[in-house]
Length: 311
Image (tube, rainbow, N blue to C red; front, side, top):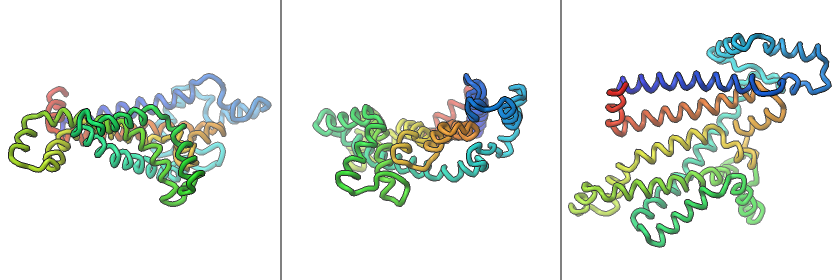
């Protein structure tokens, strides 16, 4: 187990280094002059050069990368060009909203997908199965930028049950969470159905039924438990995406998270903040997937044993 953990941590560090370098290069090697974009076309050459020197953009690219990595290891992400605040403080202010939305969306997905997928598997080829698959198809096909306004029209403008936007109490969380959770629930329901169908045909399931166990006990304690590994993999991948900042959903509902901060910084040409947001999104995805690997190995010893023999 120790060998597996060390190998995964080492590979994660390599990926993190690659992500940090890639984020740095994306900002510094994109076509155009960021200093010109910040100050506008009417800026004087002396002003352009002064800002370029202040940002360190007049130095060689390798020197800029080294300075960026050194500052990053010290927890220094720089200062916002727009608000003049430390970027780390801005991110810490916005990050709780994104985490709250991601967890709420994941909870909605699990609460919808587990019973839906289980019923579809237990009633294969029935009207319940067909209905669940239609829901999955619609959930995957409908994009967030259409689902969000549709929910606003129905529950906010027509029925008046929920607020349109903002982050003010539990009621304002419902519509963004539904928008995020519906698409994930559709993917997860199909995964639950397919894995349960595979597990329900195993010999130990027939043995459990032959012993006289209730069908609910067979499904919950035997079938779902053994079908959990692929489901956890999908959950981990999707949670990384949600934590990365559901940009479209946050913009639709004016949710003050990292996704909205990214768009605002792009509009303001606040490139240091954009760089920090992209870095946070990327690292969140990497770290959540690494945690998923650890959970997977903890639940299934075959994973860590096979990993230790190949490393």
